[in-house]
Image 1: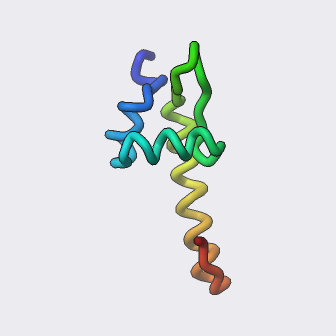
Image 2: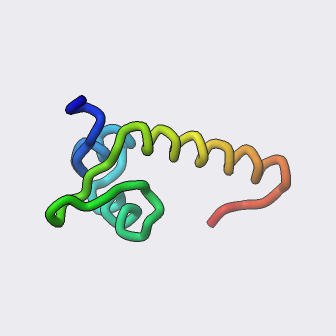
Amino acid sequence: MADDILTLKEVTVYLKLAEKTAYRLASEGKLPGFKVGGSWRFKREDLEAWIDVQKKIIILNKLTGLTCN
């Protein structure tokens, strides 16, 4: 159960992101997370669902000829 909730540092390792990038994405609501006592926490299953959505967006954009900036 302890592995179900990740810290910001653990997310940076999991997603291979810079800590600053992960913090910015979470703060902007682009990365699913929540704050506990001022510290970001992330549910692993939410991150996995987010990854699946991101992959689907890329596929749809390729099929429709749209690009993301």
